[in-house]
Amino acid sequence: MKSPWGTAKNLKETMMEAEFNHLNHATWECKYHVVFTPKYRLFGKIKRHLGQVFHDLARRKECRIEEGHLMPDHVHMLISIPPKYSVAQIIGYMKGKSSIMDRAECRTQVRNFLGHKFWARGYFVTTLVETKK
Image (cartoon, rainbow, N blue to C red):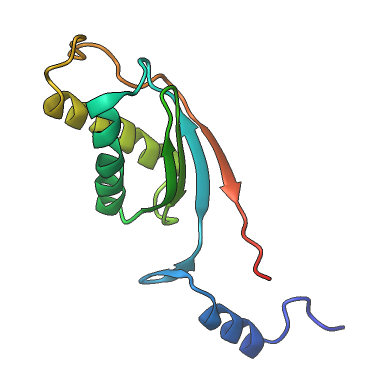
């Protein structure tokens, strides 16, 4: 009976042709669609600043934001996360650090976020499987 995976040689060739990410001992492609909400609407200076902040924070954890949309009442993000991190670790890190960075950058706001939570608790996540044609 023939294996559904083909031969080891064919599998290796297929993996080499595809554009996968590499760590020392792993080849991976893990993409997640994540949605989370702020406690207050995103507008003006905060909204403009958040895009760059999210990209910087993702790079620090070896992640890459493939696509993202900052809406006034929620954030959509397609993010590649290495298998050595959990989604919860990365999203918690990004929400926590972005809150601190925005507080430091945008101090001239009407509402003082000191002592207030910037992001609502929780998030929605789903995995993304790409099919190549």
